[in-house]
Length: 96
Image (cartoon, rainbow, N blue to C red; front, side, top):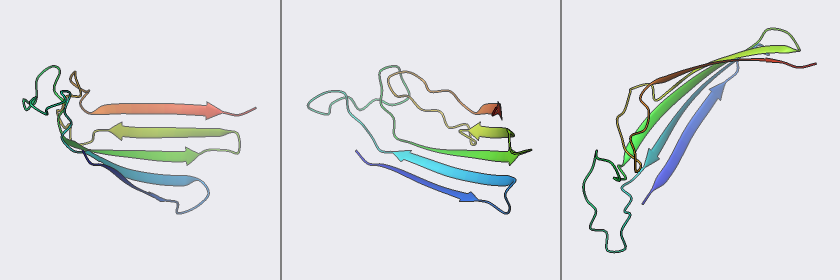
């Protein structure tokens, strides 16, 4: 099985950061003799490539916001159970 992750972050200034990342996992087997070859079913371990992105904004020295999309291309894959499709994430952080 192969696994790899490639990511890059671009920071044009102190306020903004843009991140793009891709994750790859090759075929995995759950049996000792590697006879489980079915894909896209429960208890399968599918190979997959997933691309994620995140925007980070520092509004002030104490307040920041993040917006992200996990699995941008809505890849359908199983790692024993189906993994979620495209997911949107919004977060805020205030530091005292």
